[in-house]
Length: 342
Ligand code: P6P
Image 1: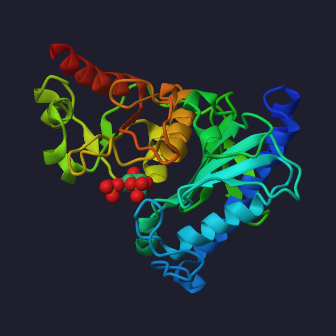
Image 2: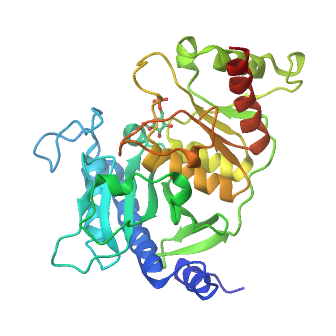
């Protein structure tokens, strides 16, 4: 049976009226950049790009989030910026690695989309050879003026496309344009992404949760109660045993959940009470939530749908509960019932 390449899939989607030629081109360009990042990541130590970035390496050693940058963080960010060197389809880019968005240079035709991305999420895992990934989200440019940070501040429900590329034993691009979530595997011999899963469905129920348990003493009461009941297993109120996984690479954990179900949780914790969570809304929570919802799952911040949150700043953080719908609803119920008791 003939294979369906990403290009063919996007042309069919365009013919079905699911996206326009400009958005199709943008997705193709992002996919091409991910192939270049996959090559760099795949070289490992042989590529001379493992380890921490150092000042003057094309970026400071600390990013705008105050986090240590890896050389591959800086390289991946540059590849994505370069790849989108303004092929007439973007108004601006924003990234975890950049303090502010980057409007297109005047020399180029202004496009109608905004691209926001985490160039290499989970990069702390690179040096130990664990899967990492690129996460991206596409929004409509708001007006004709030069794009600025404020134009990116749109609720996740406004996304026109979202996806990630996971650099693991195989490189896979997982994508939605609002009509289901689909997975493409990179055929390295052909150099093209091939459709390997159409219209992914997240199992509604699960027995597997993903969380960093070392933070348990810092969680609030509803989180303590929820996880305690998970750990109580079949003898507890949930009446079933649960398994736990935590890769500490959101792309890897979410990919597992899209593949076999589960719930991914990064809740608020009092380690830094000023921060509402660790994960970023615009280029981690929103794109992953769109992918999960398009696959029949659910995504909340413990109380409200993530895609309904109106962002206040580009690098805003948010608590994240996403995955199998029944389990996300159960975790959210613990929080809402706690709030209702006052
Ligand atoms: P922790 C990676 O740094 C990341 O942003 C996500 O990819 C991942 O889920 C999370 O942080 C891991 O956080 O606190 O367990 O290292």
